[in-house]
Every structure is written in structure tokens, then in C-alpha cells.
Image (cartoon, rainbow, N blue to C red; front, side):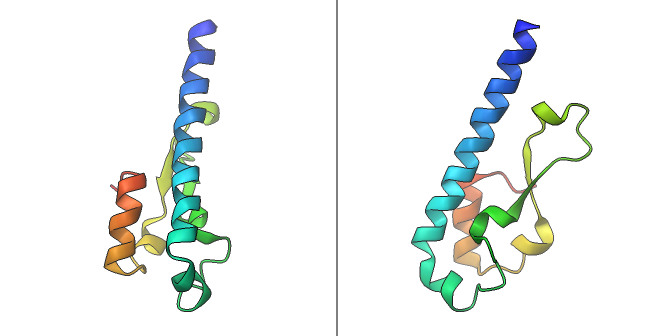
Length: 87
């Protein structure tokens, strides 16, 4: 049981670091979000989702929504890749 809780805590921390990194991108690319990126209502956090196929939702890593990611300019995609792996 304790190992399971450690795994949950580690995944939660990992997911929170990713979300924090995406929030920082909201500030870095504020002009983009206000102009061309209005479709990203909610900021760059909308680029990720929980892996619905994962056996345990508590341990599920965040995944990039590729269809949204591919709509971003290359420089912003590079920044996103620094925050989370895009497969």
C-alpha cells in the first residue's frame, strides 16, 4: 500500500510540474494567447489530458493532445517539448 501511495505522489508531482511549466508558457507567450491563440481558451494547460487508457487513473501521466499541439507555431512547440515529452 505504501509503495502505491509513493507512486501516486510521484505521478502527482510530475503532473503538477508539467502544469506549472505550461502556466509559465502562458506568461512567456501571452501576446500569442491574446492574439492568434485565442482558440487556446484556458491557456497551454489545455494541451494536456490524462491518459484514459492507463490502468490506474491515480497514476496516469499527462499526455499531449497532438491535434492541438500541431496547430501551434514551431517556436511554441519547442517550448512545450521542454516541459513535456511529445510522442
